[in-house]
Length: 537
Image (tube, rainbow, N blue to C red; front, side, top):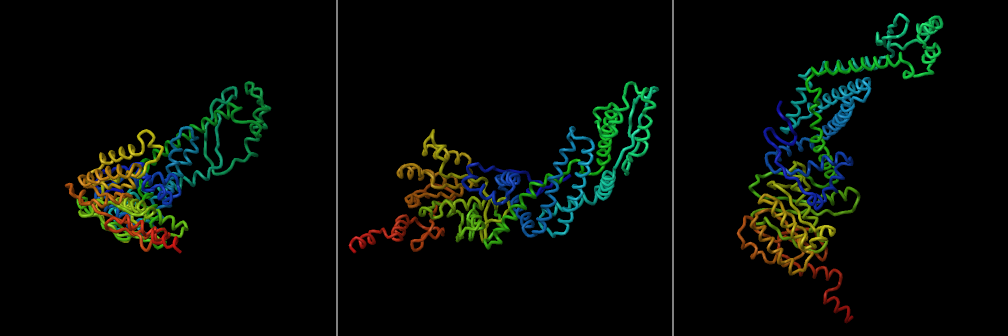
């Protein structure tokens, strides 16, 4: 049978890079995952899948189409969620069915429940997809696949069989047993003669038999009449009586045979033993939860848009109104935040950015934006932007300030340098590199010296980069760094201040370290002129 996936088109195999724990932490992804779903189990699935970065444009466009369908039809998401919940529960029942320690009767009941849920799930998914005019290749293939199960696999007969079996099982009220005796009237065999839909009447034959016991008591080989009467009246247990133990054993064996027979009978139906649809639970879950998340953001008035995926060789990105999802989540939680959107591009002339700006001016926030946008776009998910087109990267590598506990052996500068070396070892010219206040833990002179070498090496590598730094002098030496042969040119990016206020707007411009400081000084009245006037007043 043709392999079907909502993540990969036919003929495509996964070719992914897994984001590191450091990258996940640096981009604040766990904060986002915690808002995408409240379920810990779902969060593990979504995190694992999201951190697997696919870079094939054909695969990503396939995912974009699937996600677009999921986004477009909220009712489809609701119906599929209900069906997936049932499928997940069905897997639990399937485990109990295979457990030899579970009594055969319960195995039988769980098996019937399991199959009933399977029927309901197939029905719901079949009609949910059938009622929705999906356009994506992935969901159309899924629709055809489910329809084939529903229409061509004896599904209608299976549904009727299960309904009848459940009805029969629920109506069992008593069992008639037969006891064989030897010449001394001792019980030697016991068996089930019939399964009845009526409860046994205690005033019938058994009571008459108990009344007759005194006449044959001496013939029961030491068995007292009192013990038999005690069991019949509820004063004893099956474990106290060989006859009842024999009876229970026989019933257990017969029910076990019934379960095996039922499983054999149902095996003629296609897809019953494997429940192939359960393997699609993570994929549907991934798309549905991200779609619900995007819908919440959009309903709050913030833009989310479908990314346009370009060929990998372009090494480009063109965007309008991009913003940080972490801030959007905080706004949804009730914080009063004015979210600033920015326009941004990667191109041959602007492929490696040295980013300057004031402290708390949004440099880290913006650096995270770039990484999150690439990650979401390459899963086909809507991105926080008014518009976006990009060529995929093959990995997202980050270099943010290290935890002090990790710098004990090498020292801060040694640890930072080691991590930079590891990033270059892992990166290719198709990677996305994000540096945040790198080399800030050493003296300014040492940091600037190493940073210049790193940026020149980045030009040789040719990977798209944002190098966020407080060293304004680094961006002042663009000509020196662009003199090195490379595919992408180095450019200066600044976060702005307007009238002494941080605007959080980002623009391609020369560094303005001195003017930033002057704006802040004037805002708080500590420029020389302001202080001089205060002294002379």
